Image (cartoon, rainbow, N blue to C red; front, side, top):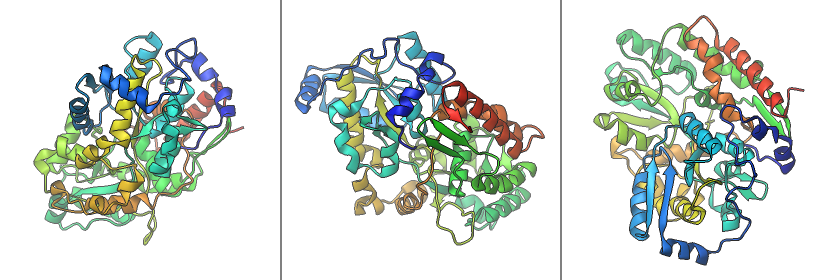
Length: 448
């Protein structure tokens, strides 16, 4: 995500005035519960000694261990970990709590694509007053750039999401299908698998904005460009869009994708029983395999993401999250102390042991991290694949400064391609039209 300037933040004041859809806006006084006061390490230690309680909204499974360890180290602090939904489901609940002025958590997990919009909506506390700005060199550039806005820091990176292809080795071996190294090979593998077993699919897909943009990103696309309040959206002629739709339209037309939604019970079942044979997603996924697809341990492996051009070495990011301190939270000092513990202190190692993929530069290059074996993946050193992927991500990608809203309407347009005669190209064109209209309504200059 490109860093927004303060000029851009002033120019989108209409975001809060409109209070539409998933745009999360702060209290009407614009500074409720916030302070410019610098908070020292001594202040934080005093707060931890005094104790209290905080509520954390997050869906990431490795945080359970972090909470347990944190409470052991600081026994006077109680942390209530709440799964308020994944992604947009949580953002909707968060938006509703902020606008109602009650029930706002102290800490919230926010994906990188969403940080900018919540920051613009004045819902997040600036962590610079806690000294978080000094952590820049401790995180890889992508995650850090997503949480930093000028001199402000609106969250601390939890992880990153360089992509890999997770595949069910047992299923592919059974049908003598090689692990695809290009997306054309992936299409052929999809055909071969479904022909061999009509109940099995190479992947599931019912339309997902994050996955679609990740695929376009890997294909060299730059459909979103931001400069101050000027925004360009090109979902019709962008080279990455064209490459993606060419292959994915065939998968849809030939009914080679399981009509199963990510994170549903049916999705977990498909990953477990082999009827969903691969999953292209971020390196944060292993912990979810362990916790949600336990019965298939040993069946799955990780590989490099298939390439759009044979011999290429290009990857992409998918997902990855930060923890933000909410401006309307009740215990900001304790909230920040937990955030720093989870993402910059002992909690990082606990999360890595649980299968999370780091955003911290020291851990990305650590021999102990790279040499870690994954029993779930048959003893594979999967981190070597993930770390290589992280180094192959194009750096010229930008999200929309209203990406949360754009993603929320994705299935109203592109999603039609999965359930009707609408093509992906037509769906993307409709998505562009709706996103452009919304952006202009919110005070941006989109495609002008």
